[in-house]
Length: 352
Image (cartoon, rainbow, N blue to C red):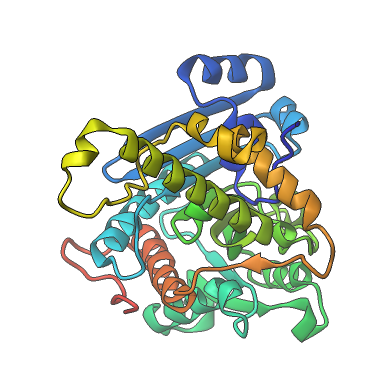
């Protein structure tokens, strides 16, 4: 079965990126496709940086530019230390990404929060603007260097979000526009544990099949950076992940039962979710499909559950806490980059 990757706004989840994780494949990808792919660990976080030229963009169906993804495996909604570290990395990567623009020392920046504050998984943009407005000092309009605005959604305003942003850009003439939005992922492990930065702008709603007009430098004539946090996945993704977890559990249980040491065990068996399992032991029980890759199983469920009645997006049960944390983190990261204070100065307080 051919792999057909589900909808995702994260570039490093696309087929080309997933297939080129080794160093040899990364070099081949750069030479043949015009995509420079680098991934490394910084402490507990995974930092993926992808540079795509025009040739590479045509090949993978994405715009040419720079994409930086910060992934925090194991992060929980109440991990204050983890969010503080992630905020620091975000500020560093914002500085790295914008250094080539040669922005003035105190650039005028328009920050726009996209999304619907009435729908929690889509509210990270408006909530981040709320936090920014609480933090940015109140000064006369013509002296402001940070202008924060929540645009709402077309269903509420009757206007394309891009039209609002274009009008503000014409009026304010900022050096840079930053848009903050919720994204869709194709791996449930990335939900609320990832931040993507890109200088290519954004198509609001594209990850959930509701693409609006583009907000980008090509359209507005002003550099545009998008900051996105994946908060939803397709329903078939969750079905595939659940099946994969069940298969891993059963395979580990069978291996444990067959181990000689199991006869001597006096404590209950504990399932280690991080430990890979040999799925060959599942073949006599579930047949050939138990040997399929996770991506192949996901493709099957996408085909089966593709009707409008069964189509749905899934978000974590702690979405409220996650969204508040990321709204605080992104606003603090932007302030620390744009208006760095003296050592020891505090960022906005934790959301929880």
